[in-house]
Length: 57
Image (cartoon, rainbow, N blue to C red; front, side, top):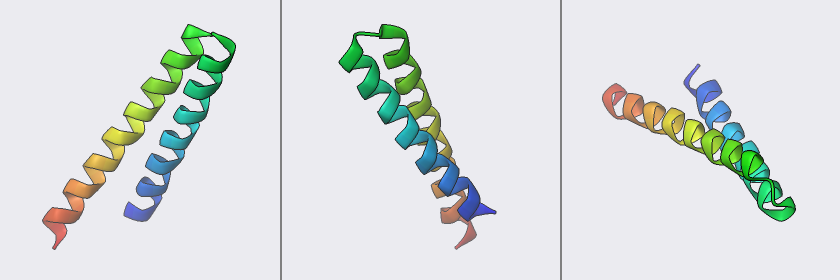
């Protein structure tokens, strides 16, 4: 299950980066903000999984 969560984190980060880049390219501030938020969500999920890994070992 941890691998699934890590994959979700990477996917959220990648999708967020695409949205942010696209938003900047077309001048859409809302899309840029959504991308940043999605990246942050992915970062938080990844940090949670790394913390869980530390306590497992």
